[in-house]
Image (cartoon, rainbow, N blue to C red):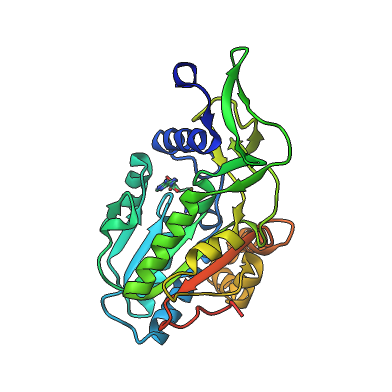
Length: 315
Ligand code: SAH
């Protein structure tokens, strides 16, 4: 395409690469390319489910509430969260926003009754419990040098970025996904938990990265064979979500949030039930919460309808 039509934007490049990457494999887990929080421990999805259950109960336990997850990976988080929701008395209909056929098949193994969608357009007109873990980082970003948009070109038979200088990033794809969630919350009620890696305040810099086999790679190497992500700008995401009267809670780090919601209590409970797994459970809790692991880099953004309560652990 670049040879025939000329350089394409970073946004277009990232979208095409990731579409191929996710459509052609299950990249999650030790044998794959990267590991996410729900794949580290069931505690993560259970706490997400418990936070949603608490919020749903305080909202008056509307019986028609649905569970909606964006980019559910293997469906592990959903399976763990749905167990926690069932304990609270909710067995919601489940809606997955997922484009990858390979990952849809994985999700169906763990949540067979789910309904699949490519976008948020077809969701039922009902209050929704939204979850997005490491979804926004995979949506394409644009890069700018001054007023000029950065592109990927071919120079001497190799892919190469155009424009050099201080880089600024933005992401219409992320803003429109956040606005779609907020629009649903505003019209039908509900709450959203958005968890990802990124920064609390907008800042300049090039954060585009490639990961394959648990190691960083050259962003332009082997297009479509590596996971391309960029830091989530939570300030921009919060702005995009603050529409239609919905409320955005103060941002909190993943480590702080999991501690406030009792991850250590849950870890103790799991160790009591499986004493032989004690070292593994302690290591998982550490990986999810420690500041030199996922605890500080990952953050939790909650958005809720004006007449829904704020989820616990966010103030
Ligand atoms: N939430 C999971 C997986 C994160 S990987 C976990 O925490 O383990 C990113 C997920 O988003 C994958 O399921 C991928 O297929 C999906 N995805 C990426 N881009 C997407 C898009 N544009 N639309 C829908 N899903 C997308």
